[in-house]
Length: 182
Image (cartoon, rainbow, N blue to C red; front, side, top):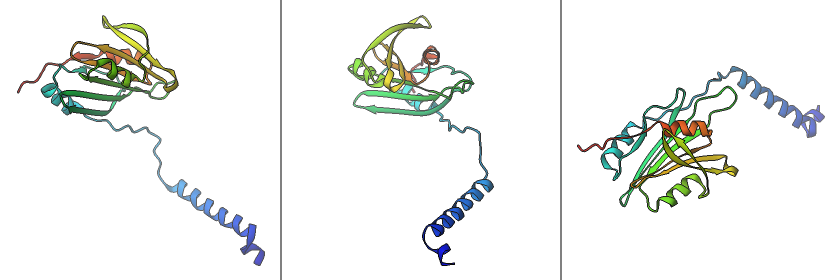
């Protein structure tokens, strides 16, 4: 009897009891296999920026089916207004969801803002999206692709782990919003 309560056998017995308890717990605990991504409402941040930003804000008119807005952050400091709007892209049969982000700001210098958001200053090409030219930038080690558009009053960056097609879709959905004056 003493062999069973001391040494290796006691340790093995205690581990078996603990593992059995964990197994029973896992069997009786309800588990959901559905994906839950919390969506954010970015309409308030957009309305505030349309009212206070020193530039005309760009926002997606319509995003593809299955895209979920996951983050929205607007900041205003010393005359600079910046808005970052993140999305989880639609789930694809051959891959998991990716992430895409719209970022825009009147920060100067514009090249610094674009390089910081794209994680690179290296322009790898250009692409036409909706008749408008966008710079393409790639950061291979971070699996990050970016589209950059520098306008006179605002710099727009569409970036993330999403495919070029998905990023182009987001860039193509952007429409300039009217300023709210009241």
